[in-house]
Image 1 (cartoon, one colour):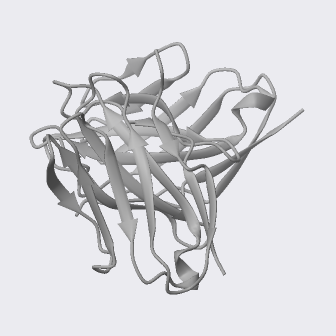
Image 2: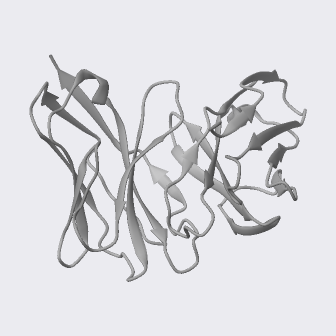
Length: 114
Length: 113
C-alpha cells in the first residue's frame, strides 16, 4: 500500500515568488494536515482538511493557504516567499472513521528560499 | 490549546529500557495521547497512542497516569535505530482535530552502544 506522497521533494525559490506543494494521502484517507518544520521552531501545524473543508488552522499569516480536492489530494500554497519560509513542509493523512487515529506522514517537501 | 512538555534530550545505553516522559496537565477528557518519532531527513513515524489505559504494541508501551496529566513512552530494549526525536502530542477524539497545534521540540534520544 502506497504511503503519503509529497511532491516536489526539494525545491529552491527566490524571495517574492510563490510555491505550490502537493500531497497525495494514502488511498481511502480523507483527512489531510500540513506542518512546517524548521530547526528553530520545531514542527508547527499549518492547517487540516477533511472532505474538502478546512477544519482547523494554525497561527500562520494569510500568505499560507491550502485546499483539498474531491479525491482527497491536497495542495498548499505560499505566496510572496520570505527567507524565513525555508523549511521542511510535511503532510499527514488519517484513516477514515478514526477521529483521533494515528497520523501517517510523508517524507516532506524541502523548500529553500534564496 | 492543550500543550505538552518534554525534556529536550535523554540518553540511554543500547539494550536497556528507556522511559520518555511527557506532561500534559491541561489535557481534556476527549484527548488522545499520541507519540511519534522522527529520524533525520524523514517524516515523523507513528509509535503509539492511548486514551486512559496503558497500551502496548510491537514498538513500545505507553503508560498513562491515572489523572492523565502525564504519560511515559517505554522502549523496552533500546537499539541504535531508536535514536530519534520523540514527540508527544494530543489529538481531540471528539472533533478529530489536532488539539495541539504544534509538536514542540520533542525529546532527542541518544542511544549509546
